[in-house]
Length: 72
Image (cartoon, rainbow, N blue to C red; front, side):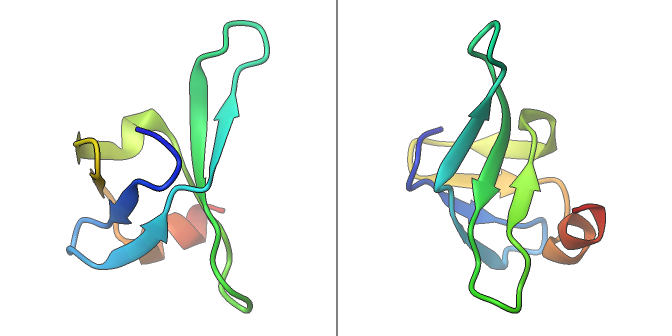
């Protein structure tokens, strides 16, 4: 997945687009993805393990947006 990939939660609600990749500084492996959201909403962070399925243009997560915001 790349910056600009559309992100959808488990209930098929659009969360936004990936706009930042957080990498392990030693290995370069992607550890987290970030979706920025307008205030007062919190930005969403999720790991590769949170992804149910992904294509070049869209990623579906295993969790709902509410579950993700509770974690952050």
